[in-house]
Length: 323
Image 1 (spheres, rainbow, N blue to C red):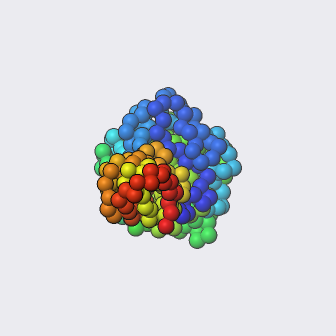
Image 2: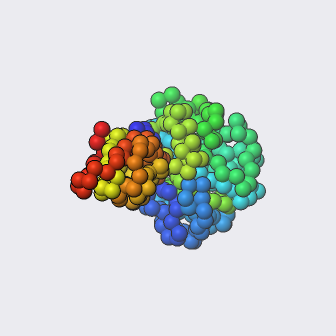
Image 3: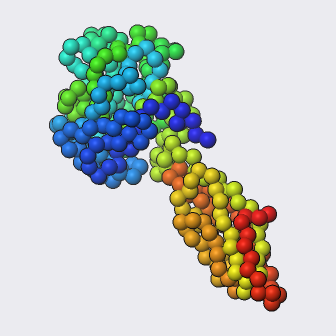
């Protein structure tokens, strides 16, 4: 079972065609400002930003606040241009000393950067750059994790589950009143130009293994927060030629589609329910590959199905995964 859901506060899939960004995990739907666009993303759809004033915002709240505590943020992004500082996700305001943290592209270093302020001021800000990646490119999808580790007094950043870069920081993160923003800093300062997909926020620091799992799932087009099905129905079954046959694939974790290949003639599967039914018109032993799929992946198992010669009894036979 995936541990990525542990202490997951919010997750914005950003696959809406328009309007607000829905928080699929928690309570914090993000309000659209100046109508961010929509396009095909890394994982289903994404939202697009014009580099001027488009963004999503969530009012300040305790769950997304800074402070001297552990937290992680992840964003999947693709830049249309890299010609200035551009903020991906932030909870920071440049006025009234309300700076908390930002995940951004820093133009001066040509690096993705995570920075925090312990007291809300710019002079106290501490940053860490993704030097392992180096300079990013336009038109390329990146999966970035950044975090504040209050236990080990450091901040860190990793791109595409590569080696993390960390920076010592013992001062915590200022817990101010700034708005949480996707696609900009403050209101529309340093706005992102390009696409953002799949933003998530945890109230803990992810392990390197969890970051790798997250990246691998996204790259494979799988939902990293959903466990794939496990087929639980029996893997042997028997029937008789010319006699009605039924078998039900059962599986955990709410499959949305089922499959069966190698069925004898006369049998077929309902891909929506997993029911295999029909009247077999041939005999033999068949190795049938069963599958159950959801957004987290697919499980496949082999069903050994034996169809005997007709005995003339004319009875119907129903089997629910026996064996």
